[in-house]
Image (cartoon, rainbow, N blue to C red; front, side, top):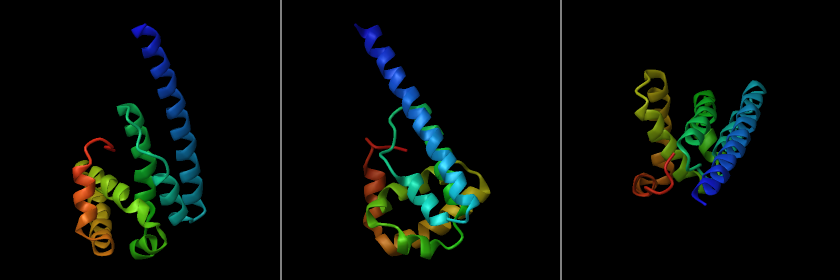
Length: 133
């Protein structure tokens, strides 16, 4: 019985990875069209996956969208507040990479996001240990 459950979960993971790959292609397309805000919205859509491979694959698309943002304040103005907490989680994920370019961009976004969403956004993103990115 456990073997059947494991194969069903791996099938679901493969389906999720396929969806994430399609979402990443859409994000790349939006970036090439200079639709950076739509790209970040697309990247943040859906709940964070639970499987580590899926999280890594999803991070690649989110990272591309984050790095394409030039007008952080404009992006935050057009972003629905429901995305603030998940965006903050991805900001911390970006900071954890140690990559200078990624960290610089994440710090810029972190500053503006904290101004816009307040300190509660930071606390919620750090306190939520179930829905990690």
